[in-house]
Length: 485
Ligand SMILES: Cc1cc2nc3c(=O)[nH]c(=O)nc-3n(C[C@H](O)[C@H](O)[C@H](O)COP(=O)(O)OP(=O)(O)OC[C@H]3O[C@@H](n4cnc5c(N)ncnc54)[C@H](O)[C@@H]3O)c2cc1C
Image (cartoon, rainbow, N blue to C red):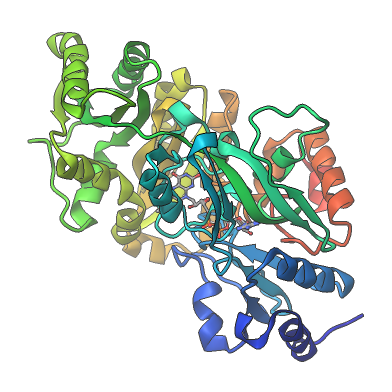
């Protein structure tokens, strides 16, 4: 059945109520462009379901009528995953009205939430009962847990607590045809068949809509020590990171790397940012330790002691340890403001690569050489989750230079493949934590194994044979996959 926008909107209003459907172009505008204002799309309407049953009704209707559905969380995707395509006939399904905490159970160290809960609100709710929900990322004030699950988000605590995948005990999903799978368990062990939960985590809304999840909580840390260390080379940073991992097993939660170029950009553009160093080091390591017991002072003291040796040998050239919560926030603020600051600085082409951690220095060296040779106008800017081998390697062009580039898409594609080839040569990936979205679909056929893509396609065919769920995301078109290598 072919459906025009008018009858589609009328039918959806009938299903979920007028108040939960937006169709005026000016109202819809903010939902049709992503947070960084790099990707935009069109939709017949934006739907804000309030219950799992409403999601089910909308999906069943759309499936029946071959209407495309684009799920949206906090719209913070950095790879064009959160906005619809351009044909304007689709439904954008925004989850923000499903933001209830269903059950907070400190005695089970678990919390069941609806998918539209904002990550920062979940963190705060856990703290109120003296627990920690450890997923932490720069977008936490806007991104939703459903989006985090759909992208298997990483962030700055992965070293200690794992990716989102590791923090989920159960999920509830509405399938493309409207069927509801309630897998909202709160068990830590359950070997009763295939692990369907993990099929949906990281599937970026292409297999169904996550409507709720049960999250793992941890004891709230009562001691936290945060420091910034200045080192001369990336090699020294990686070695120092390994020493810290050995010295603080179970306590080292974050190990971030920031290049001098990135540090200075953040200082230039982030509000109230102050340089904790006299001079910005070549490379900065941001370290965070957390312990359930003891005091922050004693933990900071142990950190300082552990750094002595590296300091005396000139490996760590400068160090700042936060002495209070404000100083800690100031250090993190430099790290958390990089995305915003980069946007103000120029046109940064970001590459979310991962390599085995010991290859980080080689990657930075080879990528820097490749940029200097082929794109001398680009400044290499590096920030990343060093402990996970995950770097956001950014080729930064001035706004003026970028405006003068005629074939922007061509430059972007060639430049990224230059860097992705280097990562692939080290057994690395072109997408560590941000996902594929619409931006990296073409890379899937270049860098993923053809058999792996074929298998993914079979899952998609099984769960969404009409391809109504987030079409054009994650999986390349069939012809591209066949010719991929
Ligand atoms: C400043 C900044 C810092 C960031 N830092 C990190 C970081 O450190 N680590 C990291 O991994 N990412 C990071 N990101 C990327 C982004 O925040 C994450 O990918 C986040 O998980 C997306 O959540 P969201 O709710 O905004 O989802 P959206 O951006 O709205 O959507 C992302 C994808 O998930 C799908 N989706 C959303 N909700 C659902 C649902 N309920 N069911 C099914 N599919 C759904 C969408 O269709 C889309 O494909 C950062 C982004 C910004 C802007």
